[in-house]
Image 1: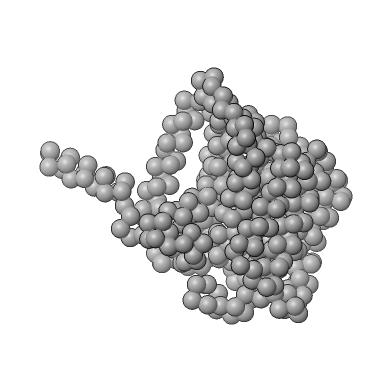
Image 2 (image 1 turned 180 degrees about the vertical axis):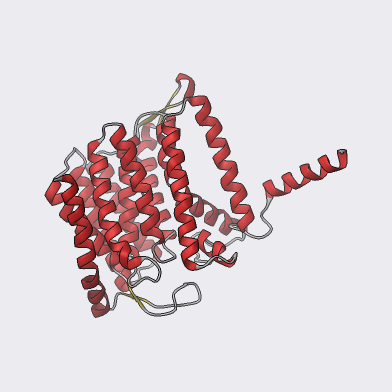
Length: 353
């Protein structure tokens, strides 16, 4: 029954996506090309609606239930409405943010989903206290926006989200969290059916309807899978989502350094930088898939690591991400602190010889 349901979600997503495409053109939910975008023709949005409807079918059939189910579904409806309105009307950023905060607050206050404390290394414990609510809301809104920001190439957000959900579901299954694993797999099946039409050259975009929904559900499932446990458990979803999180972090850093508004759009995201390096559209997407899969495998290893090895692994990953960002110019051509230090060291060693 379980695997049959996943097949139904996958198949229904394939069947309904062309209908959603026609509907998007009918109501004018389209994405027109401009200087900031990669596509060259008018494209239908709303593809995320096909993912969401297929997801609902999976929920109706399997009925995975826990104490957070109704609150999560209510939050999904809020984020879907926000995405639909944006795909149709192109909402100002502040209204989209209000929708994201509203969906997060629904889970936090109605579902009482909060990160209350973290067990730190060497027996210490960090109690969030009054900060547990803003921390949880910030996590949900932050991850939702991270997935939304990476949605810049055909199939990119859908593929990266699917890889992240595979990892989250796999770890949840190993830890006996059947609810998270089940919901995650339903979303994966629904997303992969849509990806058939969304991979380059795309016939339809998921729009904010899809990107916001995927970001929201990933953020919530990662909290359900790893909340209130250890420092290592909290880091696992960060590693799983390292690609969209780091892209968002460097986007914020880039705008601060160049004294631009944090919400200002640009063409300096990871996929833009890779395409400027000479990679094709398809190659860029596949390389970012590979990066996401790499971090997913690292997260699996990390979940089994002892605290000493985990801390060393974190340090290596941070250094790797920073060097990669500097090499591809994610912040700017002149932003090279680590590479400059390495260059000085190499020069010093060469002179010493």
